[in-house]
Image 1 (tube, rainbow, N blue to C red):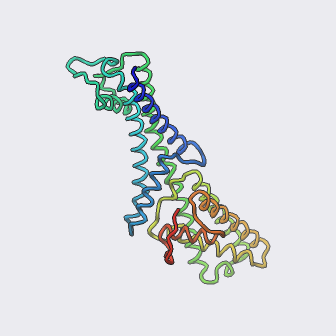
Image 2: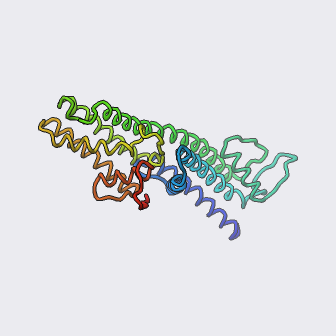
Image 3: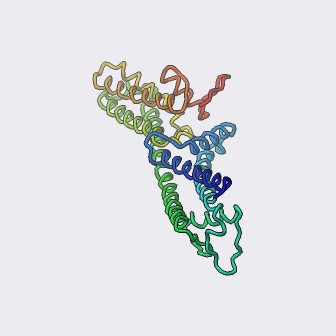
Length: 298
């Protein structure tokens, strides 16, 4: 191969490795996200902040679709660049099929192989090329499985976050203005401990499923950014109680909320020296609080 062929091969291999690394960090690495997926999700998020109402809620699903399309494109183009230096002499063509050696032909072979369609009118002849094509077919099947798995993992995490927000709203409506002081201390302690467990689950979800942060809820009833401040109020009220069990539950909820604030601060760049400040920034970015004349960025 000459220099140009070597260059295309190196670029193609780089694109394939970038795709594999991004899928690995997004789906398999517990506390990470791939650079391609993270950039796309953040880009759609910044664009969605200019939208109003329900239009902003479709940005995250569209961003996930764009990430999947980016993975498929990296794989298709990467393998096409691997095939390009070997077209047409490295492949066997059926009779009547025109032999071409341009990028369009290489991309066609790559897409057919990646999708595991396998029309068979163009087949690799060299043993090494046949192995490369077989590996691409396996990767294509794995990529399809990975995208389905990603979707199936994301929406349960979103449901847990929405359930916590609904739980907080139900608690606020049932307790009324008096809050936890209107409840039996033992019963209130059990409820707060349950809330602490749910808050901890949401913190883990943000670490494991980075993309769930970018899903915005229009209705405040199902929006954690709009209701998490109430959980902070409950924790503070419980810590001032005369009942030891309720005070412990309040400290437990307060610790869970501090952990959530630390995740929002460290993972998504929310500013604030206290948890309350972080939650105010969280609500602001998800359009559940006025900016008070200043703009903050995640």
